[in-house]
Image (cartoon, rainbow, N blue to C red):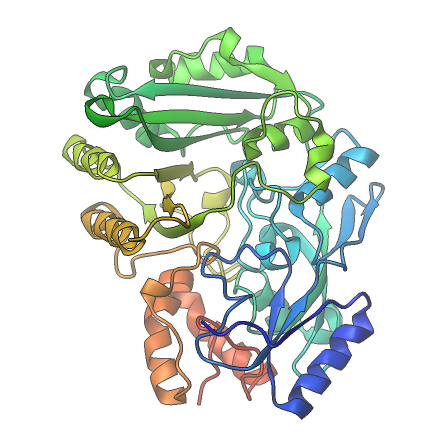
Length: 457
């Protein structure tokens, strides 16, 4: 797989402008990395262009918080963990509704939508962007007024690497209580008799009060004949545990939540908790840009569910999970504010009618001599899920990049035709508008990768 010819790390906006002009003169393809979280590694490798330059924005990570204005400017190389930490330094009652993984680079994260545990209350990170600074294909530095509303619309959810290089976002800060509550309750298949708990979750998760976000993580525990599927109900509530208990007893008593399960903490502490760091880890860990999990190879896919999956479907899912070495499936609830924002407000279209999003993941060690079996497993699970998920198009989350859906080629006609498939998966009816904007701002397709928005002919 072709890797970058060289890596360039700008420290000033003018360096980014110069790099575009130079790469054009040298006729070298350019790729951009903010946090390096692209699921298919499209910042680091290229299947369609070589040689290429990698622009690493990690040294451009300034965060300027303006509490009086309820806003912040954050450069692309900063992680969401850094952003959250800097907000909390200034205020205990302000936050930002972006990612669950603290090591995400904010630049690329927001271009795909940026969902998190407050999305049912405040929408996506991309729904809360006020302004941006980008460098376009001509090397010009533009803000919202200079780029125009079409481009500003496209960069907030139209995915990265298509319209320009994001230098910084101006974001809207949102109110958070001084005390929030988290919990994680784990059940085995034997403890969830008849799948009553997970079935009830499917019916209520999108209808609970907007302050409550309960996601479900499916794992496999045990060995050999003792293997079982576990479901972990991992939650954030924007309020105290007393109020949370009342909500749960009324709407989701089947989970059996107790006061002992509930942990009160600050919003910033909840970030490290949801991110997966061990209890009592200092919140300063969020400044390190590290994941609490080891770096291993993985493949992921996504789906959106609009009607509850029946008992028979659940049983089939569990059988599939038990066949894999290190499977993970995560269900993230929608509803609340996500159902109130129109599909065309920004390019991210997955709104009203979505009960929850599914993320499928399989991982393997570098020493594994047959990685293809894990990829075949996840594709098989994805095929199995077809009757239970959205269709026409089968929706997918662009920040869970999946080249199985299709990829661009160098031939323009073929590229446009093939892109209609994955374009509909990610963006539904917003895809054609994205192509029109691309044609206007980057007709020569300077910014491109395997799933970048192609210009119209």
